[in-house]
Length: 436
Image (cartoon, rainbow, N blue to C red; front, side):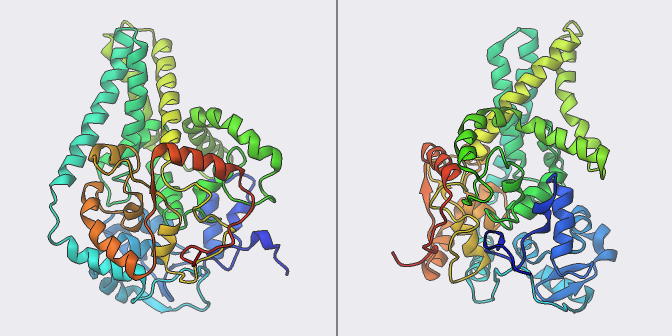
């Protein structure tokens, strides 16, 4: 069968099944990945097939990761989420056989390649890194979380628009900072992500297992979930001329309702198809409850709900302004359809899909609340953001060795670049790392 050229993926031998779904969700992404991954119904790591069934409940990071990835190729996720050599030795007893077919994904993780070399150097560097910034991250998260409830209550008690806006900003930052925690083993901080009407379980799939592993590619669910309102893939087959310009107009609306769309889509899919809701989807209701209780029971219930919805919309808008202009969308950044780097190393692919926020590095608070140190976070997602600055020397050393480049700009430049990317339909013909 002849595959249309625009459906040929730059990182895989197949066009992802899930992108043909009428409604794109984490569930359709998972089902599509199971159909595409040549994992033989179990877990695939490199060219081996593993059966972790008996290990699911024993997994140190929590059962979620193995339970939700059964039937898929977890090679890159396994490498990125395990820094020590112990897991690689431990899984040997769970290997059943070699895989029958080659991997679907064309990215590499050679022992002498960029990522494995960097990983070894980071492992050594971490032995001497000051761990106190990790405690600071915890305090920043707790402070912002408490501020969210305090400002929310104050907006009711004092009928204050300023407090309502501050509550929305604090809620946005709470959601962003909690992202620092849901890549890791189960912890209480990850639940605070749900306060924004999203859910950390869904985002562990759409963000940690999809976007983080395959950024800016057809396999990146965070590209698909915004289409057709926002489309960053430079392809005229899926982005009409009219839609390119309309997206600039619809963008503010999409920002303000993004949190609500996330919840609404999951409720709709759960009622019509498979349940993807959890008990902790009720956590956002703790905010209007705190508003009502904080008023001493004197506030109108409907008024509390309307204020809560308003602050959530403010948080949603702020989250998108920060998140969608944080690192990944600019005409100079690799997107699906652009020319591929000759060295297909997974780590270099991560670097090529990111321009970092250079204006944040001086502040741990800003890094945590604005998705800073993005390249290092993508390469080592389980590390606390407070530890990442100490890794720059080995990152620069390894990038120089393998002809990679850490690019940086400020937030305004990112916003401009992101809007240019929404208009781009012509693929870049010069591959990252190629001579000019």
